[in-house]
Amino acid sequence: MTVSSAPGKVYLFGEHAVVYGEPAVPCAVERRATVSVSLRDDDHVRVRAEDLSLNGFTVEYSGSTGGRPDVDVPAPLVEAAMGYIDAAVEQARDAAGAPDAGFDISVESDIPLGAGLGSSAAVVVAGIDAATRELGVELSPREIAERAYKAEYEVQDGQASRADTFCSAMGGAVRVEGDDCRTIDAPALPFVIGFDGGAGDTGALVSGVRQLRERYDFAADTVSTIGDIVRRGEELLADADPDEEPTEELLSELGGFMNFNHGLLEALGVSSRSLDSMVWAAREAGAHGAKLTGAGGGGCIVALDPTPESQTGLRFTPGCEDAFRAELATEGVRVEEPPTTDGETPATDDSSAEESA
Ligand SMILES: Nc1ncnc2c1ncn2[C@@H]1O[C@H](COP(=O)(O)OP(=O)(O)O)[C@@H](O)[C@H]1O
Ligand SMILES: C[C@@](O)(CCOP(=O)(O)O)CC(=O)O
Ligand SMILES: [Mg+2]
Image (tube, rainbow, N blue to C red; front, side, top):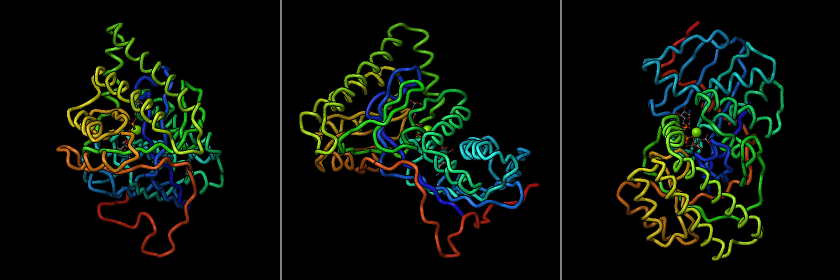
């Protein structure tokens, strides 16, 4: 068995605009998806994914023939839920030249799903790493990032940037502009995350921005203005000492840019009442700045606050289900120790699994 993990991320700046070639700066955070993979001696793929909103289920289906999972849940829901893992399996098979490889896969994650923290990218990155290693192939983090991007691009019908997957594979702070992906130095920023317990539909939100941008010049200008904010934000990071605590001055300038970025995302229609109230709660509690992170529509906001005040303020905010601090994850994808006890081996929960040939 091979076990790999990869981190989620927050966007300091630039989500949505990055889809249209503007730069973005996502930062990996210490919330990880862990994927355990064992090679099978047939071509079936069996997946246990208990964090999925389908109440956790186990499915097994024939790998190379595209057989349908046999599970008592409407097919479109299963397909939507399983798309990322399927795509990761296909990428691993392709990388290893093993189109008929079968796997037992188990996914565990402490990244909320569909909430803007890049759970999909983390699952795909960790899945490709573990599955290729099981097949005796070791890809570099950059190669994993590229394959994970292809997987997300396919599942999201061509509406994906390289930002989430590159950040999850490499760790730390990164800068992505089109296919130019780099890691950048950044001080340990004091991220606080507020989570409304909900999720947004990434595909629909990206389409909404695309339509606005095509229809109105001022919406296209809004997208390019987000790019301008990112470029100015990057300059601030480049001038900061990555080994020192960030100064109040840096935090306050970055925070101001985050506020500006949130306003433009709101204008593009991707915020929500609960995201806005969490943003305001963090600001009123003294955060240097706050914005939604990821696709929006619901899910998470990120604030900059070295004190405990924003977290406390968020906890008392109606609509905020959870508030937590998120350290910058300096490590991207990595191999974990497999569990040693028998009871913890993957894909042994047969609650709703049926063999499908
Ligand atoms: N723990 C998990 N187990 C299985 N699949 C997961 C898990 N976490 C995320 N996913 C996949 O990622 C999807 C959410 O991705 P997405 O909508 O891009 O939101 P985000 O990346 O912001 O979390 C889920 O619907 C599911 O397909
Ligand atoms: C909206 C977007 O810029 C970020 C989506 O992030 P997330 O999947 O919501 O974490 C889309 C993308 O970059 O692929
Ligand atoms: Mg995603």
